[in-house]
Image (cartoon, rainbow, N blue to C red; front, side):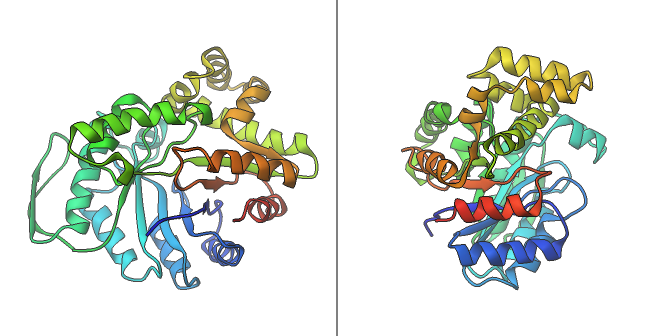
Amino acid sequence: MTLGRGVVVPDGPVSDAREFAVRCESLGYDACWTGELWGRDAFVTLTAVADAVDDLVLGTAIVNVFSRSPATLAAAAASLASVAPAGVRLGLGPSTRTAVEGLHGRDYDRPVRRLHETAELVAALAGGTGRVDYDGETVSVADVPALDADVPVYTAALGPAARRATGRVADGWLPHNVPFPELSDAFETVAATAREAGRDPDAITVAPYVPAAVDADPEAARGAIRDHLAYYVGSGEGYRRAVATAFPDEAERIAAAWGEGARDAARAAVTAEMVDALGVAGRPETARERFEAVANLDVVDHPIVVVPDGVDDATAERTVAALAP
C-alpha cells in the first residue's frame, strides 16, 4: 500500500504507546513506528499497538542488525504481520558502536556489510517461499523454510556505502540526520545502485525522519530540536558524517564538545541553520508550513514525525496534532 504520513511513538511504557497510536490514528496518520534502544522491545510494543488500532501500518524505526539474528528478526516481523491490521514495515539499521558494543556486547564489525546481508536475508526468510540457503560474509542460514509473509524491509542508511546497500536490497530508505536540502542528492546514490542492480528506484519508498517540536514559545521548540541534534551528532559517527555533508565545521564542534562531556556546549553549537535544515520547530502554523515543505519534496514519499526524546507529553501532543494530515 502507499503510505502517507507517519509518526514515531515516543519512548515510554507500552501502555502509553498504545494510547499514543490510537490518538495518532484518530488524527489521520497512516503509519506508526517505534524505535528501540533499551527498556522497551519494538516488536512487543507494536504487537500491543496492533490490538488497539484499526488501520495503521506498523513499523520498526529502527531495530539494529547486531542484537538479533536474521532468523529471529524474520520470525518477529512475520509474527507481527499476522496481527497487524494494515501491514508491517521492518526498519533495520546498524545503530552505533556505543549501543552495539556497550549495550549488547557485540563487536561492531563491518556494519554496512552486516546491514546489507541482514536486509537481504531477512527479506528472503520473512517474505519468501520454499527453503532458504544463504552464505554471507557476516550472516548465514542453511535450508530454512521461508515464512511467506508480507514484510517490506527498510534500511536506515546514512553514508554512501549504506545507501548503495539500500539500492541493492531494500524496499525503503529511512534517512535520519541527512539535511533536507541534501535528500535528493543522497537518494541518487540509492537510485543509481538500484538501476545497476536491475531494480526500479521508484519502487523504493523514501521515508525520512523529521524531528519536530511545536510550542507557543518558538525558542522552546527549537531548543528541543537542538537537544535532539546534539545527542545524535555527538553519540554516533555516522550521524556526524551525515550532518557534516552540509555543516562540517559545526558537526565537528558538536561532536568534540559531546565527547568531552560538555553537553550544554554541544547543544549551543547547533546553529539556527542546522535546526531549519534538520528539523521542524515553532508555533503550530510555522511548524506545519515547514513540515509540509519537507513532505512535498519530490524525493519524499512518507515523512515521519519524530518528537524528540525528553519533551513533555503536552509538547508531544501539540506536535502530532499540529502536523497531522
